[in-house]
Length: 198
Ligand SMILES: [Zn+2]
Image (tube, protein in one colour):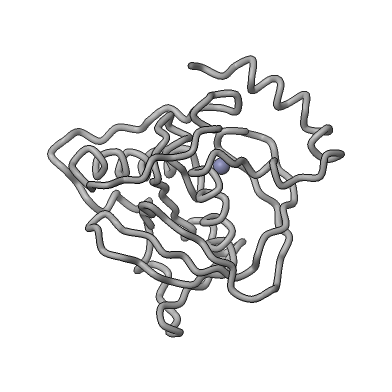
């Protein structure tokens, strides 16, 4: 298991992941104006939480904070669900990008191609369904140093980035489902709602 990349003087601890029904999951994240120690600590705590929960991505909303901040690591899932990434047309070694911290991210689809794959969410454990999304995307964000990251992605990284950036705008993957599929998930969604801790 990879270790968080940056360590501050503040102690790093795993955070509680909130479940469907928590109001933070429907909140649009505030833009991060200054990447101070509290943001660096939060990002590292989110990375730790993501690893502990076996997730490939986590948004600030999922730890109860409505901020434009999400973390991703697609390496543990690489064999089953590979990813590719490019900067200025040159393919990157994925490891060099992971764990990825996305601050104030923007996503733009590249090309018309769309793909359908199964998604799940740490805030809705046990709920999985197929979601159609753009295959290739361009991501523009800041990293923890405040420098601009501008890359294109395909595979799980593309999907995870789109899923996490949705979270930052209060959108959940189930919002992309047709109403019949959503209906099938209602019993589980009601269970999450009744368990959501506020
Ligand atoms: Zn999610």
